[in-house]
Image (cartoon, rainbow, N blue to C red):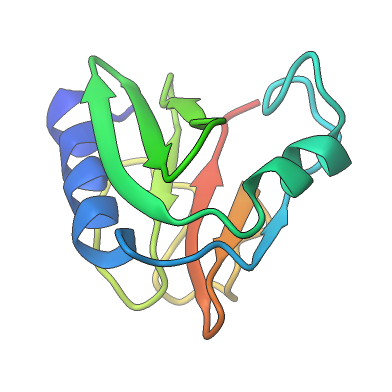
Length: 126
């Protein structure tokens, strides 16, 4: 289970590796644990073309500040995590994603890409 230091490590990694990147693609499943009150296609469309300005955290909640709303937020809960391709963000004792796994992980629920690579994936525990 991620604790506050792991969530802070994820926030810092996003800030270091993703700030200034323009979102060129997102993939979001139709899963009420990921989004609620909006369709996946509408949510994806609302993120496209936005630039990541910063990453913030309060408790186990993290959100991305984009150059304009919406600002997607994430609740890490029991097994949430952020993975950035090629970056060792943090290790959890019971992580769903291993370094040797195929990228992106089958457990991921949100993918954010820039023009060259997948920047980050969010894992939400079911």
